[in-house]
Length: 129
Image 1: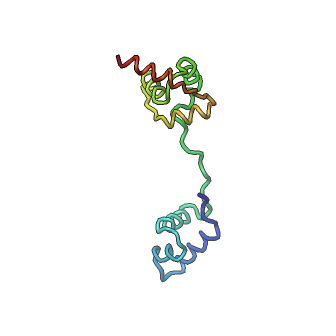
Image 2: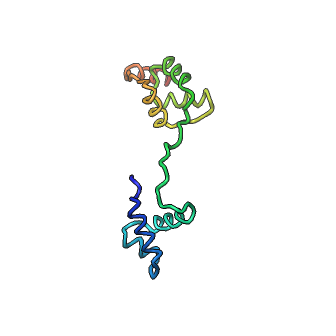
Image 3: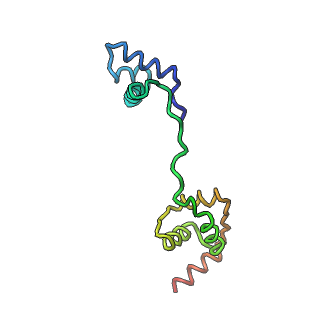
């Protein structure tokens, strides 16, 4: 979602600072949340500007830095499914990762997994005996 324009931010603050209105009323007038108005007031007080903060890239993957180990794991266990890769990784490192985390990491590393259902199902039925 894009940040609110600087023009809108300035209108919100100038309306509130003009007086005779509450944060709730300003929020209703400009169709933003009460928290947005409060955040803009805090930003102006703390930084002196209403410019939006720079966007961050987010949190790095738990698997970042383990590209070689993951590639070796996939090479050695090509018939594993995502859940099995996650279980293997937890046994090897003690770090539990979700299937979605493992899937995203494998996709970013372009390590595709070819599913062989007959091999997988025969492996399961063989382990159940």
